[in-house]
Length: 406
Figure 1 (cartoon, one colour):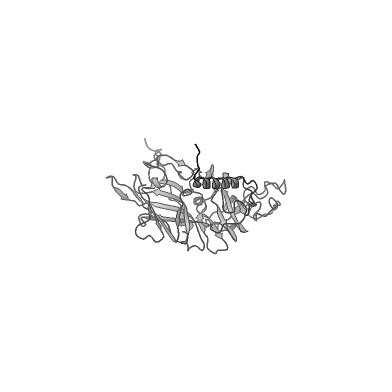
Figure 2 (tube, helix red, strand yellow; figure 1 turned 90 degrees about the vertical axis):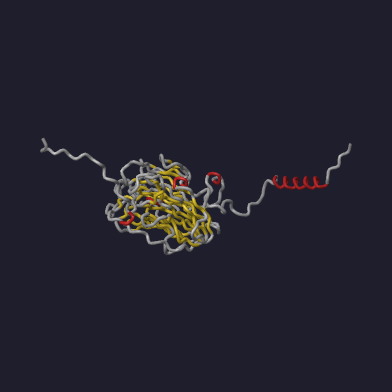
């Protein structure tokens, strides 16, 4: 018997053959440098040789220039030296002469001031940081910062209390090492300042900023971060972010909550995203605070994962105030917006009668998002005094015995 193959199958076979032949081409010409369409590909992109130039700024090389690190010469007459400034005097140039900075009360220092284009890949800071100390980032010669956050809070440390974080975007390691891995592209210029707005000198500031000089994709947004504080007795829902104008993606929340008036569970409030003209009702509403931070049934223990965590252990029957600190990174699920964005959270807990109760608590937050420039003006950052954490409860002690008592 003779079989006849339909013409359509012949055509399909020819198409497959052509495709297979194309796949077997061993030496295709690359017309653009691999990786330029990306900013920060991680492990799978490490083999890609893009031609980017790596630079790093520390107190040993404040400009990041090639071949200019560790050039400081010991100066016994240095005014206001940081801690251990004289430790290398006997060793000389090249032997850890200027590893740290000192930032006096009221002083501002510039940590980074470089021309672009490029991408900041990693920021590390350590030692004695508080809400008196403010980080500000300026992109492309803007006059108002795109990032304005007290230094510890930028790294997810709330209430000035250390809590370990092991996440994809931020790591906080013992004793107080703070690391940010958020990719921060800049096109024309990048400037970072550190301001000591407190009353005490910071005797030791250690930091390192690693970045690549490389093209930035046209569709890349700029990282923004904003710190806020409110008392839910006056502002409920609490506003995490508002007034954003332009296209962007919301990527992270740090929420530091001080439970002050109600001993029962406090985390029933919903996180809501009002996107692109939403008015009374949002487009996205969660189902509870612990749900938004990817937990359930309250924060029974600390956890820190790639995308969410709770970093401070509190027992619900502790004397008030109780301190809670959470982070949530929208790395795998960014909230996209085309024109505007508002983010809120309800301060809502349980009452003694098992009904929901509006709460009177102290809340601070950091919102992180990428967007086009220029950005809308930020609300004024509260003063250093207004940023201080709520004091912890005084320890209850037995009264001292009266020596005159019988």
